[in-house]
Image 1: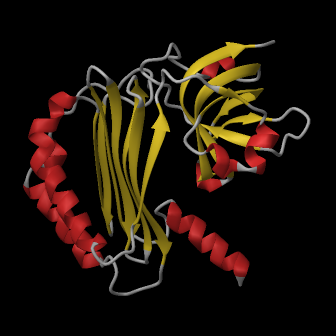
Image 2 (image 1 turned 90 degrees about the vertical axis):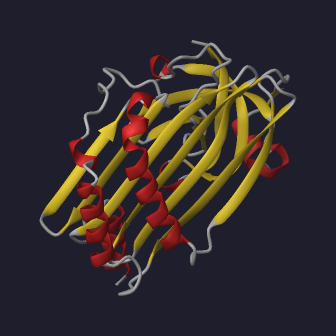
Length: 278
């Protein structure tokens, strides 16, 4: 029975559990003189009760004394006839089609992603045999798409009002703060003690699909998720070239389940320095 539940949950998470499905993504980077912020809304659900909603306002670079992140999150698998109904999803599709949402021309897709992209919005919806999707990669497209985005967000807000959304607020050290040198074993032995602190850690680095992490060479199963968003005030443009090397990294440590499917016990985010050791 547990195996069947796991298979169903996995299928639901990828939108394959039924013909009525919505996945909405909105990402934008906003820069000021003192910091850059990463705004993200990600929501997906289907009529069989899979719901995942994330809304983040995160600092990716700051020279202020401290910086604050705001995160809202909700995820659940629930069998319910009255949750996100097929009729509601179909009405949303018709409303977007009526507004010409799927006929709009979008900006060019980047040849290579520098994550996070400055502006990105996508929507994929499925209603029976009717499947529609559209993506935008330029803020230039924000104006013609704004009314349709508002329609989607209004629909989500109405549906989310009854959910116990988890909200968090994290105040972290600035990118200009001095870092604490620490080993990954000691760090994860008492993660709450270092939560929100700037640290320097030296370990083996892996950059691959759904696994961007630092691992202890002597104990490979002890690893730390590395946020793939470097600070805009740092010198790191892309972490991928360091994959397979032993490196020293500096960034903000965040305790708790992080990374792909929450499989890591902590995250190193806002990476500002990377040094190849061997």
